[in-house]
Image (tube, rainbow, N blue to C red; front, side):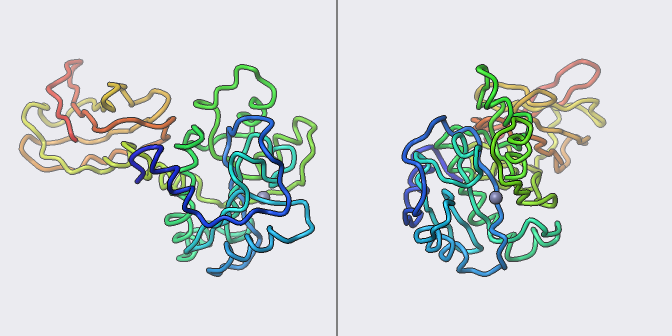
Length: 294
Ligand SMILES: [Zn+2]
Protein backbone atom coordinates (compact mmCIF):
# COMPACT_ATOMS: atom_id res chain seq x y z
CA UNK A 1 0.00 0.00 0.00
CA UNK A 2 1.41 3.36 -1.05
CA UNK A 3 0.46 6.25 1.22
CA UNK A 4 1.00 8.83 -1.50
CA UNK A 5 2.74 9.74 -4.75
CA UNK A 6 6.05 10.28 -2.95
CA UNK A 7 6.08 6.67 -1.75
CA UNK A 8 5.10 5.44 -5.20
CA UNK A 9 7.91 7.42 -6.80
CA UNK A 10 10.39 6.05 -4.28
CA UNK A 11 9.23 2.53 -5.17
CA UNK A 12 9.87 3.13 -8.89
CA UNK A 13 13.22 4.78 -8.20
CA UNK A 14 14.38 1.78 -6.16
CA UNK A 15 13.85 -0.69 -9.02
CA UNK A 16 17.26 -1.79 -10.36
CA UNK A 17 17.83 0.01 -13.65
CA UNK A 18 19.91 -0.82 -16.69
CA UNK A 19 19.38 1.22 -19.81
CA UNK A 20 18.02 -0.62 -22.83
CA UNK A 21 20.04 -0.47 -26.04
CA UNK A 22 17.14 1.00 -28.01
CA UNK A 23 14.64 3.59 -26.86
CA UNK A 24 13.55 7.12 -27.65
CA UNK A 25 14.58 9.99 -25.39
CA UNK A 26 11.48 11.80 -24.16
CA UNK A 27 7.89 11.36 -25.27
CA UNK A 28 5.69 12.51 -28.13
CA UNK A 29 2.57 12.20 -25.96
CA UNK A 30 1.87 11.97 -22.22
CA UNK A 31 1.58 8.50 -20.67
CA UNK A 32 -2.08 7.44 -20.85
CA UNK A 33 -1.97 3.64 -20.67
CA UNK A 34 0.10 0.92 -19.01
CA UNK A 35 0.44 -2.16 -21.20
CA UNK A 36 0.57 -5.79 -20.03
CA UNK A 37 2.90 -8.01 -22.07
CA UNK A 38 4.05 -11.60 -21.72
CA UNK A 39 7.66 -12.44 -22.54
CA UNK A 40 6.77 -15.76 -24.20
CA UNK A 41 9.16 -17.38 -21.79
CA UNK A 42 9.16 -20.26 -19.36
CA UNK A 43 8.55 -19.49 -15.71
CA UNK A 44 11.67 -19.01 -13.68
CA UNK A 45 12.90 -16.52 -11.16
CA UNK A 46 15.75 -14.99 -13.19
CA UNK A 47 13.61 -13.90 -16.14
CA UNK A 48 13.37 -10.22 -15.17
CA UNK A 49 17.14 -10.08 -14.77
CA UNK A 50 17.75 -11.94 -18.02
CA UNK A 51 15.26 -9.79 -19.93
CA UNK A 52 16.93 -6.64 -18.64
CA UNK A 53 20.39 -7.92 -19.62
CA UNK A 54 19.18 -8.96 -23.08
CA UNK A 55 17.43 -5.64 -23.67
CA UNK A 56 20.62 -3.78 -22.80
CA UNK A 57 22.67 -5.53 -25.45
CA UNK A 58 20.54 -6.94 -28.24
CA UNK A 59 20.45 -5.68 -31.82
CA UNK A 60 16.69 -5.99 -32.03
CA UNK A 61 14.96 -2.60 -32.01
CA UNK A 62 12.89 -3.54 -29.00
CA UNK A 63 12.71 -2.54 -25.35
CA UNK A 64 10.30 -2.19 -22.47
CA UNK A 65 10.04 -0.03 -19.37
CA UNK A 66 9.86 -2.91 -16.87
CA UNK A 67 10.18 -6.69 -16.67
CA UNK A 68 8.86 -8.86 -13.84
CA UNK A 69 9.21 -12.44 -12.63
CA UNK A 70 8.01 -13.97 -9.39
CA UNK A 71 10.59 -12.34 -7.12
CA UNK A 72 11.96 -9.31 -8.91
CA UNK A 73 11.21 -6.27 -11.02
CA UNK A 74 13.78 -4.73 -13.36
CA UNK A 75 13.69 -1.46 -15.27
CA UNK A 76 15.11 -0.93 -18.76
CA UNK A 77 13.69 2.42 -19.91
CA UNK A 78 12.69 5.34 -17.70
CA UNK A 79 9.00 6.18 -17.90
CA UNK A 80 9.90 9.70 -19.04
CA UNK A 81 11.46 8.09 -22.13
CA UNK A 82 9.73 5.97 -24.77
CA UNK A 83 10.30 2.20 -24.82
CA UNK A 84 9.84 0.25 -28.07
CA UNK A 85 7.30 -2.31 -26.87
CA UNK A 86 4.15 -1.93 -28.95
CA UNK A 87 5.02 -0.24 -32.25
CA UNK A 88 2.77 2.75 -32.93
CA UNK A 89 1.43 2.47 -29.38
CA UNK A 90 4.76 3.34 -27.76
CA UNK A 91 4.21 7.06 -27.59
CA UNK A 92 1.47 7.20 -24.94
CA UNK A 93 2.13 3.97 -23.05
CA UNK A 94 4.48 2.35 -20.58
CA UNK A 95 5.09 -1.38 -20.94
CA UNK A 96 5.64 -4.21 -18.48
CA UNK A 97 6.89 -7.61 -19.67
CA UNK A 98 5.64 -10.52 -17.58
CA UNK A 99 7.27 -13.91 -17.37
CA UNK A 100 4.90 -16.31 -19.09
CA UNK A 101 3.10 -16.89 -22.36
CA UNK A 102 0.03 -15.53 -24.12
CA UNK A 103 -1.21 -19.10 -24.54
CA UNK A 104 -1.48 -19.64 -20.80
CA UNK A 105 -4.79 -20.85 -19.39
CA UNK A 106 -6.56 -19.07 -16.55
CA UNK A 107 -5.12 -21.70 -14.22
CA UNK A 108 -1.63 -21.03 -15.60
CA UNK A 109 -1.98 -17.33 -14.85
CA UNK A 110 -2.92 -18.14 -11.28
CA UNK A 111 -0.38 -20.91 -10.67
CA UNK A 112 1.97 -20.28 -7.72
CA UNK A 113 4.66 -18.64 -9.87
CA UNK A 114 2.29 -16.33 -11.75
CA UNK A 115 0.22 -15.45 -8.70
CA UNK A 116 3.34 -14.52 -6.77
CA UNK A 117 4.59 -12.45 -9.73
CA UNK A 118 1.29 -10.63 -10.22
CA UNK A 119 0.65 -9.93 -6.52
CA UNK A 120 4.16 -9.12 -5.24
CA UNK A 121 5.79 -7.51 -8.31
CA UNK A 122 3.33 -6.51 -10.98
CA UNK A 123 0.43 -5.16 -8.90
CA UNK A 124 2.52 -2.76 -6.80
CA UNK A 125 4.37 -1.70 -9.96
CA UNK A 126 1.17 -0.74 -11.80
CA UNK A 127 -0.16 0.97 -8.68
CA UNK A 128 3.02 3.03 -8.40
CA UNK A 129 2.83 3.86 -12.11
CA UNK A 130 -0.77 4.92 -11.64
CA UNK A 131 0.05 7.26 -8.79
CA UNK A 132 3.09 8.77 -10.50
CA UNK A 133 1.65 9.16 -14.01
CA UNK A 134 -2.06 9.66 -13.27
CA UNK A 135 -3.18 6.59 -15.25
CA UNK A 136 -6.30 5.27 -13.51
CA UNK A 137 -6.41 1.69 -12.27
CA UNK A 138 -9.05 0.38 -14.62
CA UNK A 139 -9.20 -2.03 -17.52
CA UNK A 140 -9.18 0.22 -20.55
CA UNK A 141 -10.55 -0.89 -23.93
CA UNK A 142 -9.58 -0.88 -27.60
CA UNK A 143 -12.06 1.97 -28.05
CA UNK A 144 -10.32 3.95 -25.31
CA UNK A 145 -6.99 3.55 -27.06
CA UNK A 146 -8.46 4.58 -30.41
CA UNK A 147 -9.89 7.70 -28.73
CA UNK A 148 -6.50 8.56 -27.26
CA UNK A 149 -5.19 8.89 -30.80
CA UNK A 150 -8.19 10.49 -32.45
CA UNK A 151 -10.04 12.66 -29.94
CA UNK A 152 -8.84 16.01 -28.68
CA UNK A 153 -11.15 15.60 -25.69
CA UNK A 154 -9.59 12.31 -24.55
CA UNK A 155 -9.64 12.29 -20.75
CA UNK A 156 -6.98 10.08 -19.20
CA UNK A 157 -8.75 10.03 -15.84
CA UNK A 158 -11.82 8.42 -17.39
CA UNK A 159 -10.47 6.71 -20.50
CA UNK A 160 -6.87 5.80 -19.68
CA UNK A 161 -5.90 2.66 -17.84
CA UNK A 162 -4.37 -0.77 -18.24
CA UNK A 163 -4.37 -2.50 -21.62
CA UNK A 164 -3.08 -5.75 -23.03
CA UNK A 165 -0.68 -5.60 -25.96
CA UNK A 166 -3.53 -7.23 -27.92
CA UNK A 167 -5.71 -4.16 -27.29
CA UNK A 168 -3.06 -1.82 -28.69
CA UNK A 169 -2.64 -4.17 -31.66
CA UNK A 170 -6.38 -4.12 -32.41
CA UNK A 171 -6.57 -0.35 -32.02
CA UNK A 172 -3.59 0.15 -34.34
CA UNK A 173 -5.18 -2.13 -36.92
CA UNK A 174 -8.38 -0.14 -36.72
CA UNK A 175 -6.44 3.11 -37.11
CA UNK A 176 -4.26 1.78 -39.92
CA UNK A 177 -1.13 2.31 -37.82
CA UNK A 178 1.92 0.00 -37.69
CA UNK A 179 1.62 -3.00 -35.37
CA UNK A 180 3.26 -6.36 -34.87
CA UNK A 181 0.08 -8.40 -34.54
CA UNK A 182 1.00 -9.42 -30.99
CA UNK A 183 -1.83 -10.82 -28.89
CA UNK A 184 -0.22 -11.03 -25.45
CA UNK A 185 -1.00 -11.46 -22.61
CA UNK A 186 -3.64 -13.70 -24.20
CA UNK A 187 -7.36 -14.20 -23.64
CA UNK A 188 -6.99 -15.83 -20.22
CA UNK A 189 -5.12 -13.11 -18.38
CA UNK A 190 -7.11 -12.62 -15.12
CA UNK A 191 -7.97 -8.98 -15.67
CA UNK A 192 -10.72 -8.44 -13.10
CA UNK A 193 -8.78 -10.13 -10.33
CA UNK A 194 -5.59 -8.34 -11.31
CA UNK A 195 -7.14 -4.85 -11.43
CA UNK A 196 -8.37 -5.41 -7.89
CA UNK A 197 -4.89 -6.53 -6.85
CA UNK A 198 -3.41 -3.34 -8.30
CA UNK A 199 -6.06 -1.20 -6.64
CA UNK A 200 -5.30 -2.77 -3.28
CA UNK A 201 -2.00 -0.85 -3.31
CA UNK A 202 -3.65 2.54 -3.77
CA UNK A 203 -4.17 4.78 -0.78
CA UNK A 204 -7.70 4.73 0.53
CA UNK A 205 -8.91 2.33 -2.11
CA UNK A 206 -12.17 0.50 -1.80
CA UNK A 207 -10.12 -2.62 -1.27
CA UNK A 208 -9.49 -1.61 2.29
CA UNK A 209 -13.08 -2.21 3.22
CA UNK A 210 -13.79 -5.41 1.34
CA UNK A 211 -15.99 -7.72 3.36
CA UNK A 212 -15.77 -5.55 6.42
CA UNK A 213 -17.11 -7.02 9.60
CA UNK A 214 -19.47 -4.80 11.47
CA UNK A 215 -21.86 -5.07 14.34
CA UNK A 216 -25.29 -4.31 12.94
CA UNK A 217 -26.21 -1.16 14.73
CA UNK A 218 -29.79 -0.63 15.89
CA UNK A 219 -29.78 2.78 14.26
CA UNK A 220 -29.27 1.29 10.85
CA UNK A 221 -32.70 -0.28 10.80
CA UNK A 222 -34.31 -3.61 11.02
CA UNK A 223 -33.97 -6.71 8.95
CA UNK A 224 -34.35 -6.71 6.06
CA UNK A 225 -33.05 -3.42 4.76
CA UNK A 226 -34.39 -2.76 1.31
CA UNK A 227 -31.39 -0.85 0.13
CA UNK A 228 -27.82 -0.27 1.06
CA UNK A 229 -25.58 2.49 0.02
CA UNK A 230 -22.03 3.46 0.68
CA UNK A 231 -20.20 6.68 0.35
CA UNK A 232 -16.52 7.12 0.00
CA UNK A 233 -15.36 9.90 2.24
CA UNK A 234 -14.10 12.58 2.37
CA UNK A 235 -15.50 13.53 -1.04
CA UNK A 236 -18.87 12.13 0.02
CA UNK A 237 -19.30 10.44 -3.33
CA UNK A 238 -22.09 7.89 -3.46
CA UNK A 239 -20.41 4.95 -5.06
CA UNK A 240 -23.27 2.65 -5.82
CA UNK A 241 -24.20 2.64 -9.46
CA UNK A 242 -22.19 5.63 -10.52
CA UNK A 243 -19.04 5.88 -12.55
CA UNK A 244 -15.78 5.62 -10.79
CA UNK A 245 -15.28 3.51 -7.72
CA UNK A 246 -18.40 1.41 -7.75
CA UNK A 247 -19.30 -0.78 -4.83
CA UNK A 248 -22.10 -3.28 -4.80
CA UNK A 249 -23.55 -3.82 -1.40
CA UNK A 250 -25.71 -6.73 -0.55
CA UNK A 251 -26.60 -7.53 3.02
CA UNK A 252 -29.37 -7.68 5.49
CA UNK A 253 -28.83 -7.56 9.17
CA UNK A 254 -30.35 -7.94 12.55
CA UNK A 255 -29.75 -5.23 15.13
CA UNK A 256 -26.91 -6.09 17.45
CA UNK A 257 -25.71 -9.02 15.37
CA UNK A 258 -22.37 -9.12 13.69
CA UNK A 259 -22.56 -9.45 9.94
CA UNK A 260 -20.16 -9.44 7.07
CA UNK A 261 -21.11 -7.05 4.32
CA UNK A 262 -20.21 -8.82 1.10
CA UNK A 263 -19.56 -5.86 -1.06
CA UNK A 264 -17.54 -6.01 -4.16
CA UNK A 265 -15.62 -3.41 -6.06
CA UNK A 266 -16.75 -3.67 -9.65
CA UNK A 267 -14.50 -1.03 -11.02
CA UNK A 268 -11.96 1.05 -9.26
CA UNK A 269 -12.18 4.54 -10.56
CA UNK A 270 -9.51 7.13 -11.01
CA UNK A 271 -7.57 7.17 -7.80
CA UNK A 272 -10.16 6.69 -5.08
CA UNK A 273 -9.22 9.11 -2.40
CA UNK A 274 -11.41 7.78 0.35
CA UNK A 275 -9.91 7.47 3.75
CA UNK A 276 -12.99 5.85 5.17
CA UNK A 277 -16.40 4.67 4.17
CA UNK A 278 -19.83 5.66 5.30
CA UNK A 279 -22.40 2.90 5.31
CA UNK A 280 -26.08 3.09 5.91
CA UNK A 281 -29.27 1.28 5.15
CA UNK A 282 -32.33 2.49 3.35
CA UNK A 283 -35.82 1.24 4.00
CA UNK A 284 -39.03 2.50 2.54
CA UNK A 285 -37.24 5.48 1.03
CA UNK A 286 -35.98 6.53 4.44
CA UNK A 287 -32.29 6.57 5.05
CA UNK A 288 -31.32 5.60 8.54
CA UNK A 289 -28.43 6.69 10.66
CA UNK A 290 -25.19 5.62 9.08
CA UNK A 291 -21.96 4.44 10.51
CA UNK A 292 -18.57 5.64 9.59
CA UNK A 293 -15.59 3.35 9.49
CA UNK A 294 -12.10 4.69 9.60
ZN1 LIG B 1 3.75 -7.68 -26.08
